[in-house]
Structure formats: structure tokens, C-alpha cells
Image (tube, rainbow, N blue to C red; front, side, top):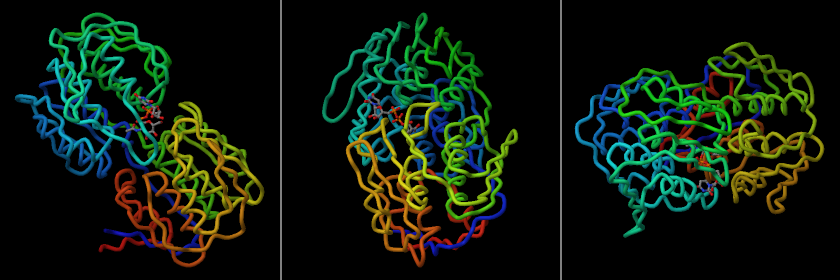
Length: 418
Ligand code: UD1
């Protein structure tokens, strides 16, 4: 398995372009199943999860390929309604196949996604919504079998929690349902808005995406589309924090600063100099940062996907701070690894108490999940000596050209193939 080796101590300097959003590209790729027409998606990052999704679409019957950042989905022939374990186990977002296949075929069999490193992550909200729309659900031989042979019917669906995936799945299912669906307490993440933009380009009638109530008037048929996915706000936040940690001066291009208000506000509160233009963020360390507490929340709150990176930053800021995680249970797997590098942190329930130290020192560490991996890379960029990071396949799921981008900015980082 490949490893990343970082020798810390270099300040990041220069300019780097951010990639398209993984979390936006994934549901948009699944949206291609809603039409028999050709679709073209631009600004798609080169990531393991994207490859898994393309393999998945080809398995289902939608011929799809990727050249550079462009994914093309051809006219479909016959779609298959079974999503087997081998495909679903690789990526939790595979459950987004449920909405479109239920809408197109009136049935879908999806292998149960199971747990994952950052908590139980059930899909009860997705399934409850499909039931309300008239589907029946069976659990058999490790598969969730969903039927809606007479089609889905629009209705009011109130989520107990504003789940991103459930909002996307219901959007994907309801665009072809009979009548009107209203999602109440919908997720408001920018990726939801991006998916709704695509669906509307296909001929769907969606209003209110990006707010807590989304209204979808079902249509009979959807057509092909061309779309460029939004910038990856989590990748952008990661590079902003890396610049802060290495006392650097970096310009991030091809970004959408409006999606990062919570992170920018907290970094500015800590004392980092940040200037934003339309598609650019300039980040400059001008002096020691102050400790700042964060609490993860649904959008537009502080993103859970930036919690681990923020913690790495606070480990090196003099003073005490608290990180509270409210979106996922058990999303502190990076704590032990940061401790191995010399961080002074302790977990108490949903909170982590951090006492900033002057230095971290390099050590072998192991990645437990995608954003935990990002936190370890950031810590390695500042630690004295060598940090050897293993199980980096998690990082390859979500960061395009990570070591190339950091090298371009002056970091001493390389991938070792084993
Ligand atoms: C998406 C993102 C992920 C991000 C998360 C929260 C993608 C591919 N992934 O994940 O990077 O961390 O949003 O911003 O876009 N839950 C239930 N029942 C459900 C669904 C969710 O209890 O049916 C719980 C989960 O266990 C979790 C919380 O709700 O504790 C958030 O989950 P959700 O918003 O659905 O996240 P994902 O769509 O899985």
C-alpha cells in the first residue's frame, strides 16, 4: 500500500487551483440514470470515489467514461436494478443509486451499506421518505429491496435531521414522481443546490433548493445536460488551514468563497489574513493565531468535514480551545494519531479539549478516514522530522493530486509506492 512521507517545516507559498467538488459530482453522476440522453459533466475531480461511481454506472447500464476532468454518459440501453455488495461497500454514497433507479424502474435492490469508521451512518431517513412516497421495503439476504411498481407519488416529507444524502436521494426520486413533493427540513449544503441546478437543466421543476423547504413538481421525462460542478469547499478549507499552520502565503484559485463563510469567519477570528475575490481566496499568516472554539453544524454552520483539519491547527495555537462534533458520532479517530505527533488533546464525549503545543514531532501514523487523513498531512507539514502516513487510500478518495499540490506550494511531501 502507498504511503505519504512529509518532512515538516516548509512554509507554503504560491498559488494553487482547487478541484471540482467530490460531494457535488457524486450525486450529479447518479442523476445521469434519470435520462436516456447523453450527459456531460465538467470539473470532475480525479478521485477513487469518482472511479467507483463510474464503474457503478457502467454496471447499472449507463455507459460512462472520464477523460481529464470531463465525464460523458452515453445514451442508455437497459438499466439493471441491482446494486451488489462489491460496489456498495466501497463507498457509502452508492446509496444515491436508490432514488434514480426507483424513479426509472419502480424497483431497486441495494446491498446494505453497513457501518463505517465515522459512526453508524444509518439510512433510515432515506427509506422513510421512499415509504411516504408509496414504496414498500424489504430486507432480505443483506439487501434492501424497494418496490414502487405503480410509481412514486409526491407528498410532504419532513426529515427528523437535515441529511445531505437523504435530501439528494429524495430529489433524485421525486423529479419523476406523480404530483408534488415537499421536503421539509431539507439539507441546505451547496452540493444540494448544484444537484438541483442539474436536475432543473434536465427539465425538472424544483424550487427552494438551498433552503429548508424544497418543492418538486414531478415531470414525465428528463433530458440530457451539460454542467460544470462547483469547487470543492472542503479541499479549499483544507489548503487554507494548511497555509495558516505553516505560516504561509497562498492564493487559492477556482474557488467559491461564498460556500466557506463559516470557515473563513473562524480563521479570521483566529487572526489569519484572508481576502476573497469572486473565484479566489488569498490567505496570509501575519502573526501568531489565537485559539478559537468550533462546533460542527449542518450548512451554513462549520462543516464536520473540516473538523479534523481545524483540530490539527488548534494543536499548534498557544492557549486552550474546544472542538465540538454534533453531526457524526465517533468522528474523533484522528485524536490518537495527533497525540502520537505530540498534540495535547483529550476527548470528552462529543467534545475535544485542546491545549496548544509549540511543536509537533514526526512519527508513523495511520489514516482512519478521509478528513482524519487530511489532518495528519497538515500536522506532518508542521512537525519536525519525518511523518510517515499509511492507509492513504482514504485520502485518494477525496483529495485530487494532494502531494503534487502541496509540493507545488513548497512542501516537502512525497508518495512512496509499495
Ligand atoms: C454527506 C457528505 C459527507 C459529510 C456529510 C455531512 C457526501 C458524499 N458526503 O454525507 O462528506 O460529512 O454529508 O455534512 O456528500 N443520518 C441518519 N439517518 C439517515 C441519514 C443520515 O441517522 O438516514 C445521520 C448520519 O448517521 C450522520 C448525520 O445524519 O450522523 C449526517 O448524515 P448525512 O447528512 O446524511 O451525511 P451523508 O449524506 O452520509
